[in-house]
Image (cartoon, rainbow, N blue to C red):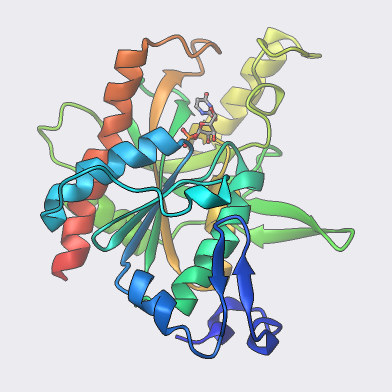
Length: 296
Ligand SMILES: O=P(O)(O)O[C@H]1O[C@H](CO)[C@@H](O)[C@H]1O
Ligand SMILES: O=c1cc[nH]c(=O)[nH]1
């Protein structure tokens, strides 16, 4: 695969490239054999908010590859994101929101190109607020809506508002539901639209932030409008994630577990044990999906 697939003509003119936030130096963009050796076998890149969750996921996936031991953070020296390689899977933390995720996503997209990975799939493994669904439900995102309830990713570029399509490929959604879910899992898994916001509080219509200038009624009207657009979960990355991966020509999916039902309240008040159990649910789904990909 060449860099032309990345839709950035400037890259082919760069002799070296420093993936700053990962602290990975590409010393010769024409000869990336060292990067290929380290990362060329990667088939799936899992990304999620916290380093701890991504470490737990790496440990959870180890048996697929017959690996044991403590996962090593390959990018610890970058002091930003945690990156664990387990067999053909990379587990990467991305922080809270599209701005932190987009930084590491740009660098990961370049990394898989330099490494000449074959058809890598990017999967976000996250948490979310649910909309009219039971807490603990796992949502595989379809169309991603921004905080204006528009099915686009809006981003200022060179002083202009740029809008990009924000949907996840249906074939990957179908495969995740077909191979990742089992009827005896003890939790529901659905495919639905997702709203992504840049703010956890006002952006998601909460009334429990430090500032709030609307009424409970305004909030409920907004949430119901979102529900009417087929939105069943709210998080903070899906619009950016779906649009950037689509533009970069790679397949992607978002699998998130709902921590609360936002039609019933704003505070995430589940216990840490419950949260840990919920966070494992997307692990169960993605592990089976990864096995399916590896057996293809
Ligand atoms: O659980 P993670 O992956 O961090 O994702 C969700 O949780 C964060 C907010 O608490 C946001 O990043 C949101 O998208
Ligand atoms: O309500 C929620 C819960 C988790 N993550 C979010 O972005 N919103």
